[in-house]
Image 1 (cartoon, rainbow, N blue to C red):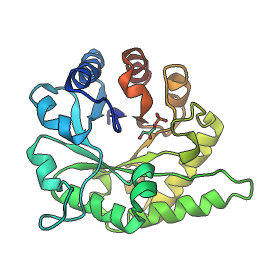
Image 2 (image 1 turned 135 degrees about the vertical axis):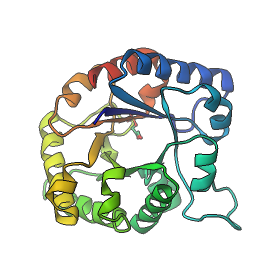
Image 3 (image 1 turned 30 degrees about the horizontal axis):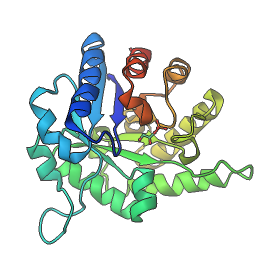
Length: 248
Ligand code: 13P
């Protein structure tokens, strides 16, 4: 399975010219490393403008509705995302959980509806704090089980997980390689509980939280890391280059 370098643009940039430049960098380094699956998640208004020239990058949305259609102002359905050329969608990002009160149940529904439409959901989860008492272990377990509740055994091979500790996002302070390794073992154990060992081994787990050019190599070398979900560095070509190269 190819490793995945997924770039979450968040609410940037403000204009189409810069958006084209960002995508250009993703495409350039994706072409240089065909063994890495590069995924790019622009803000929705730019997707249609960018889709005609996206290959070999996989186009990704930053969110999806839990609904198929109807009276739901401001939302985009999974079928619409597929229609405009998306093949991936991020669900349950911590910023959406915090700003829009998304629950594990909603996240699971979003992942399920994405799968029904042939999209690959990138399901995000992560603790807000790494307390000395280890409460984060219970929180991660609960969050992951809740977010996967509607994902059948059969579909478990079609999802991607993104472990994004909230305390590391946008701070420049990434997780240590030891902590990442032990957390990946914990995540794997939870997956074995849910899906059994054979299926659990097939689930790809990305790390997200201040992945930059200077730490990508050491994080990529942690056993169990299937790739990265990158925020701020998505808009910096030199960082994009180093991050994709670290996964090759
Ligand atoms: P940063 O890489 O800016 O820390 O963001 C990570 C993230 O939230 C990606 O979804």
